[in-house]
Length: 297
Image (cartoon, rainbow, N blue to C red):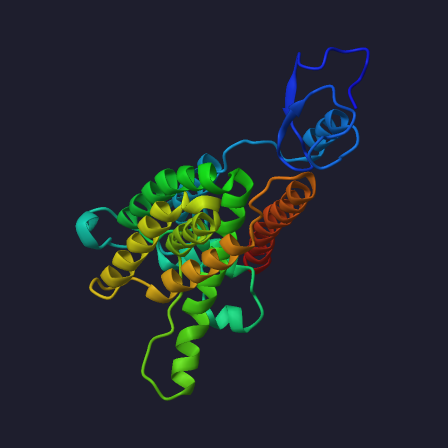
């Protein structure tokens, strides 16, 4: 029923209940029956996180931590400085292992001791210039595409969840192999590549669910990219394919769970999970800072 004091078609909005375009002056959505959709739309705006991109904050955090990897040895007496780099940009120095450890790389020994927050902090750390340039180019381009397909908040959620799952497989996978008598190495993990593979997996899974097959081309493209990059990981040394595979599988899982319709309940749930994820990232770095200060004091 329309509000008699306002003309019916002088404004429109997306119903927060069903996501359909309706008149701004309807007292009840003609599609889903939601009461007072305009007022509830305003409430939803106040409660949600907004529509700002997470791509630049992710890139900014990675660059900040990368810079700290060089700065910490200058601030902490006795901490080893930058080490020789490797690869195409080997002439450039790389952050020392000691600095990366303080910043929170995913050291299997520490994670076994209960420091699971390192599975989060390691996502945003990088071992050298080539490593960070390659990953952040993917974050810039693929992250922006994922925000268009999945939404800003869903992109951030996938990035962190997939990154954690990728790091977890890279840490615990070799432990399982060693327990089976298979020779492998336990090495600390850093990098956003598992999270990047998660974005590919999420877009592939989400696009396949879109009605009418409109996302099949995108799904195939993401699947091909992931397959090619995983195969390349077996060719070049120093690449954690376990993190890539774990991140991709994690992204597929989240992509299958993301709601196709952006109704009020779905949006509220997504906001809740995103806020919780942001809180976990903040806690992980604050806790790591506390541990470092405790050791240095």
